[in-house]
Each structure stands twice: as C-alpha cells, then as structure tokens.
Figure (tube, chains in turn orange, red):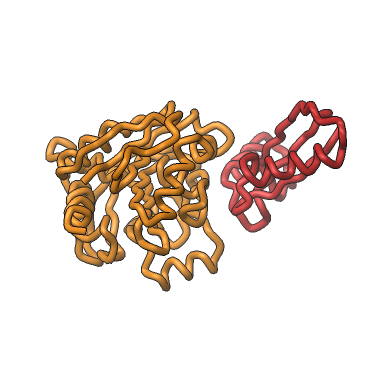
Length: 222
Length: 79
C-alpha cells in the first residue's frame, strides 16, 4: 500500500501524517507541491494540515490551484483515494472534490484541543475500523473549520450517508455538526479533526490510528 | 488597464467577522449599526487594453480563484 503525502509551503502536519500511515503499514512518499505527477501506483493521497501558502486569499485556495493538485484531482476522478485533514479538507473543498466550504469559526477563535466525535458511518474505507455511532476522541486545531453548504447539499450528504464524523459538542458552528464528509464515490474524505494527532499512546489516545489502520487494511485487500 | 474586484460573502452566509466589527462599533458608542459585512478588494494591473477582453478575463479569474462562488459573490470595476 503506497501513500503519497503532499507538502505545501506552510504544511505542518505532513510528517505526522506520514508517521501515521507508516505505523499502519503503508509505504509513504513525500511529494512537493511543485511536482506535477504522483508516483506510479499510488493508492492514497494525503493532504495534510497546516497553513498552506499562509492561508492567503482563502484557506486552501492557492494550494488547490498548485501543479500537483491537478494530478490529485485526476487521481480522485479516476477512483483513487484521497484523505484531506484540516487544511487538507479546505484544499479539497477548494478543488471541488468535496462540496461546501470551511468558514471562519463562528466565535472567531482559533481552537486547539481534544474533542469528542461521533462516527456517523462505517461504510467507507476510512471509517471501516469503527462502528457507526461510536464515540471517538481526536484533536482539533483550526481557525476556519466552520463547515458550510446550502441546505440541499447538507440533505444530500445525509441521505447518501456521506457524513463520516460529526461533533458531539459543536465547537465551530459547522452546519449539522459536520466534522468530516466523503465524496459520492466514498473514496475522498475531508475532515477538520486530526486523526494523526491521536495515533500513538504518547498523543494521549489512539482513536485516530484506527482510521489509518482501516484504510490500509481495506486497500491492501482491495 | 486597472481592474478592481470586490468579493463579498453572499447574503445568507453568516459573517462572524462582520458581526464582531458591528459589536465593537456598538461598544465605541456608534449606535444604530444594524449590520456589518466584511469583504475584500483586489486590485489588478492588466496589460490588456480592450475593456471587453479585460472584463472577460477578470471574470474568469474570479470564477477560478479570486472568489469561492459557493459562498462569495464578486463584482468587477474597470478603470
């Protein structure tokens, strides 16, 4: 199982993400944003957290238009897996691979703390290691995590079982308490919480490791 | 040719920053500010000299990058 982690200027969770993928048994390539192609045979692309391009213009907007993102889009459109965490989720909405947008937190505060999530569906490769309805702890660290989409889009996400994670105690004003969603083919996941920061006992919890383990296990057997 | 792009959150999209500014204005004693919406102004210096082509190009820039049309509207002024 081969994972590619994209590195933008300002990414700061790229190595944490690589460590989490490796701990789950994946081989990892770090890919610089100016590269134009992904390595041959990549199974999953990871878009890490951070502040790509200083959050200039809008969070994720410049990264979404970088050379490598054209290849990431092609990879996703060909049925490849993509995991976007935090800034990575913002990049995925800016590319149009996921619907909606992440607005400034409703109370304008940068929030950095462990938080309780509900796993809404186990019917994705990413959440296959969890039970639907299970409560898990992950870290959040964001200023712009307030998920917004029009009511019709929210209803579609709900009807199609595409909400992966929701907040038990909504920290940022996200519509429908949404913390993470998947694409219609269920192979692109964007989420604001950081599973890679709850992936080792030294982090204070390992609920996030389950996501990487489940994903790697699914793709190895695919 | 110079172009100026105004980007604003669409009506109905909550603007917590505008709301914070409104609150601060109230605390400074400016009564009766019922709503504040905060947006962006982007100024472009273009080599293009034809107005029609310049406007078409800037609109395409807005659609592709300068605005996120899921939540933002834009207007283009040419000078």
